[in-house]
Length: 201
Image (tube, rainbow, N blue to C red; front, side, top):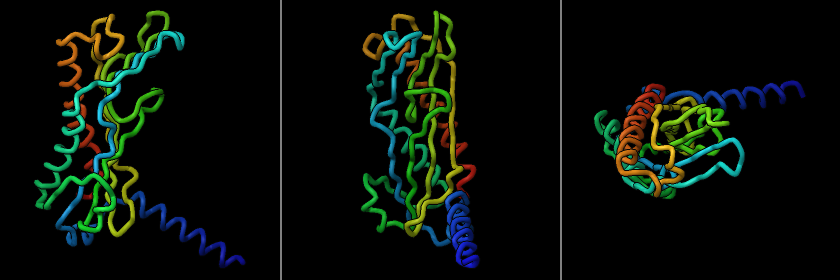
C-alpha cells in the first residue's frame, strides 16, 4: 500500500515538474517547425469600474490589428531563432508541427473583468485606483501532447489618463484611441519578451 502511494506521489511530482519546466536543449534540437495558436479574444477590453455596479461599463476596443500584433511578435521571435513558423487556428493541426506554442490570455491579479489585454479604469468616490492599459499572457509550448512551462508568464501595466467622458470605446475621442492602441502594442512587446525568458527558446 505504501509503495503504491509513493508511486502516485512521484508520478504527480513528475507531471507537475514537466508542466512547469522549460523546453530542454534536446527538445529544441528536435524542433524545426512550430505552429502558433493565438487564444486571445478578437478585441481588447475597455472596462470602467466605478463606486457601484451602476457606474460600471464594459466594451471592446474594436481593432483586430492588436490581436494580430501579438501573433506577429511571437512569430518574429521564433523565426529569429531559425524555426519555420506558421500561425494555426486550431489544435487539430498540431500534428503537422514539431512543436505548438499557444498564446493564452490571463487576468491581472486584483483587477476583475480583465482577460488578456485592454484599457481599465477603476475609481471609487472619484478617487482613481488605476487608469491605463494592461497585457497579461502565458506562452505555453506543447510537444508530443504535453504542455510545458506554466511559469512562462508576461504582463505589462501602463498608466494612461484619457477624457473622463470616455464611458466606452465609441465615446472615446480619436486622440485617446491612438494613445491606447500605442500603449497596448508597447505592452505586448514587453509581455512577450518577459514570457519568452522562461520558455527555453
